[in-house]
Amino acid sequence: MRRLARLGVLCGLLWLCAGPLQAGAWLQERGAGFASSTTRLTWPQSYGIQGWQLPSGRYDTLYVEYGLSPRVTIGADLGRAISGAGKSLLFLRLPLIGAGPMRLSAELGAGRIEGHQALRPGLSLGLSHARGWLNADILAELRGTAGTDVKMDLTLGLNLPQRRKAILQVQTGVQRGDPGFVRLAPSVVLPLRERLQAEIGASWGLVGDTSAGLLLGLWTQF
Image 1: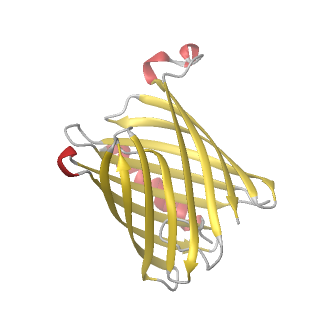
Image 2: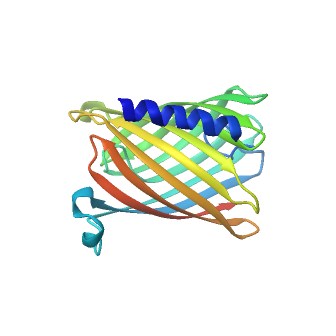
Image 3: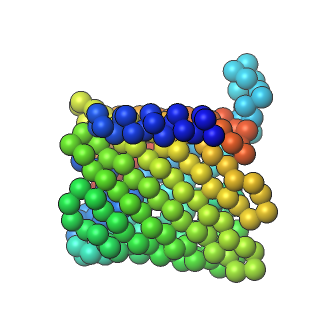
């Protein structure tokens, strides 16, 4: 708990010294979109640096969202669910508070997780600052008799010179039948072309997760 408290203080201090990424609580403008493709490789923390030749896990994701109207963003989320099982979901996002530095949006996704029909309601709260953004997302994956999993992510983003970004994310979740987990995932985003960016990051399980990981991704806006 002391480690988590220190992390919260760090996020707050960075926020005081940090416009938002077009995701989370922010809707896409009409006719505009965002897409990302990421690969996360994982190893047990017990391996140490010398044992990192071959990853023990790999997770690929594809995320797309598109502004259907000023008040409606639609999208697709393909890859891995909270449990690590495969998912394929379509979602709809609507604004609850859609003006000013604070944004609150509601989301509803539907599709399949691990072969089960699933609904995924969620809420996103975002705060924008002159040099960055802070976003909190909470999602529940409802799979009928297969159970419900819940996840909450806290994301701090910092806009850097030359279109670069620094991101610090605290990922938390509870899978049915398992203890909750807390994972720290920092990354940097680097421009490649006008509408193409690369994300390079890492992850480290703090509570209920003994994995370490590397993240490689591509972002594009259209």
